[in-house]
Image 1 (tube, rainbow, N blue to C red):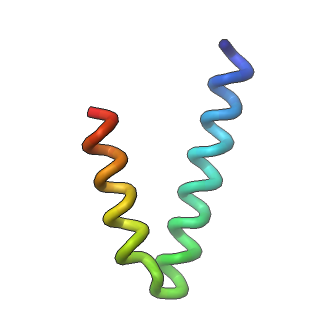
Image 2 (tube, rainbow, N blue to C red):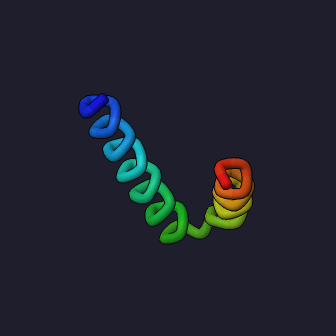
Length: 43
């Protein structure tokens, strides 16, 4: 279970990094929509 959590944390960190990168390059709009849809599904 612990390894699974670590893997998830790494994945989230990677997502946050790619989000920051796409924000920087200006490709964030579609990414933001995807993230919002994902968050809604999780709740």
